[in-house]
Length: 144
Image (tube, rainbow, N blue to C red; front, top):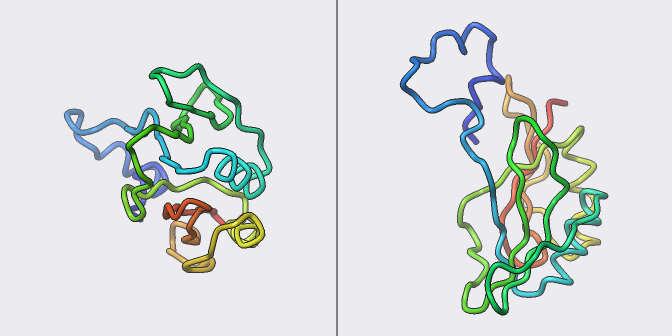
């Protein structure tokens, strides 16, 4: 995981040239799944949130969204789409946590597996690497 500039020293933000990417460049993410009910249960259990059904953009497609708030960070959804398979190691999405050890401890009971338990990425905090119930790799990040 490459540290985001805003997590480094405050002075670093002033040194980023104006023509580079702005902070928080990701505006949306999708995690493709093979079994929506199983995947939804996994994410609701691990993160203790409720995922809400979204209107289907295409026939046969099903989407459930993570809780969304205005402000920094990206919103996203689980997507079940005919002909599209879970990418396995595709793009790695990191979820913010208070203590990533807590969320990673819920992973096995929710049907996933811990690839790498909480470890330091000093001075940027800690991460854990896990697989969801569909085989997707996801990251968990916390400051402590």
